[in-house]
Structures are given as structure tokens and as C-alpha cells.
Amino acid sequence: MTPERLDATFAALADPTRRAILKRLASGEASVTELAEPFAISQPAISKHLKVLERAGLISRGRDAQRRPRRLEARPLAGATQWLEAYRQYWEHSFQRLDAVLDELKALEAAPPTPRKRRTKR
Amino acid sequence: MKTIGNLTITTPSDREIAMSRDFDAPRRLVFEAYTRPELLKRWLGVFGGWSLDVCEVDLKVGGAIRYVWKGTGGKQMGMSGVIRELVVPERIVSTEQFDDPWYEGDAVGTVLFTEQGGKTTLTMTVLYASKAIRDAVLESPMEQGVAASFDTLAALLAKSA
Image (cartoon, rainbow over all chains, first blue to last red; front, side, top):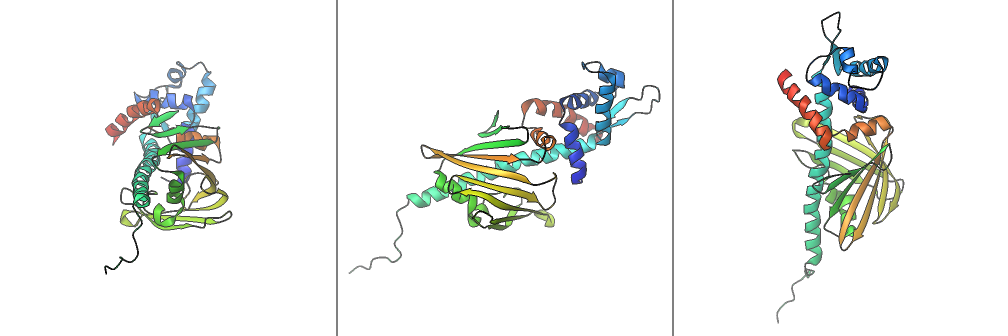
């Protein structure tokens, strides 16, 4: 997935209405009228959101020429969620390792200093 | 605010994400582990076959930071930055730009080290170029509600795969 594509996907996902639309489409394709129903916004406003989602490649139009149902396109979303999961894991794994490094540094400090030369017995 | 394990995520402004994590060590040591290359190489992004191969930190204002990670199969990821502010061992502000950027413009990271009772809280705040990018980064499955909606989608992805 290219950075430009990822940007478009993320920008599209940043809006709660658009996320709700995607969630609705996850359970099957739907017409613009059906998609507008649960929201307290106009059909043109919904169409605008659909355009953003379409440009991001997150949805496409079905074959029925009358209803023009929208359907979810899974692939770009998979790319975005994969990236986000990697982001979270990056810091969790890193900090777990940092814990171990810190334990070691603390132990080194707590240990009595090792003399460079052992005192020779006389 | 979300706490995962003891990693806490907050949004101080509409272009920022802050991460906070407690460490059982004085901040002097946490600061060292965060700025000394030989220590950074042991933890920063080091998991899942990745190693921090190049790690250079010129610890002064205007000093350069350069990280290059190497992964399995010849994968490589690099990041460069410049230190803008430095208060040892309390605070570092630096820019970050990935060689293969997934967002536009530089992000600016501020890392604060605060100590209480021998424990240190590390707070990292990243300022992104836009609210849209910040919001997108936040829409991570680590947030319960979003995770639930993504689960639905994940099931669909599995079916269409």
C-alpha cells in the first residue's frame, strides 16, 4: 500500500459518520437512501461522505443500476488496520524491552564496584 | 483516556497524541536508555526480527538523530530527526521524518521524563501536521469501541480473502 493511499484511507476513516457507514456496509450492500436512514443528516451530505469513501477505495458501487447500492471494499481497510496494529505493537514491544534494559542498569548500579585489580595477598 | 497494560494514550490537542508509560527506575537511567545509542539499540523497535542497525544521537540542540532498522528479508526502515530542545534528564523535543513517509510533513515529538518515588513516567507527545492524520492514527484497534467495529470488518475480510 502506497503512503498516498494510506493517507486517503486514514482521512476517510477519521470521520465518525463515515466509520458508521462502513460498519453498516460490513453487514451487506445498501442504497444511498438506506444508508442515510439512521443519520440525522441530509441525503446530499451522505452522498458527500460516500464520495470520500469511494475516492479512498473503501467502497464501490454494485451492479443494480436502479438502486446503485454501495458495497464495502475490504482491501484498503485491511492495509490501514494492519498499519495501526503495527504502531501499537511497536511501542508495547519496545517498552517491554526497555523495562529489561532498565532492570539491568539498576542492577549494575546496585552492585558494589568491581575493583580493577584484585588486591594481592601477602 | 485508554490504558492498555500500563501504556496510556491521551489527546492533549486536536493534532497531538500523547503516550505515557511508567518505568520502575529513576529518570536518570530512563533518560540514558532513551538517548545513548548502545542502549537504544537494545530496545527501540527491536522485536519481530527487526534490529536497530544504525543509531546515532548527537545529544545537543541542533544535533542530528538517525535510526535505521533492518528486518527479515532485507527490509529496511529509516528515520531522521533534529533535536530542537534539550533539558537533561527531563525533556527532549525533536523532529521525526521517516525515509518512506506515511504522513505529510514532519512530526514533532516531545518526550518528558518525570520522577516520583524512584519511578519514572515517560510521556511522549507527537504533534502531527494535521488533525486528519492524528485522528487516523488514533483510530487504532487499541480503542475498545473501534476494536469492536473493526471486528465486524475483520470477519468480512476473512470471508472475502
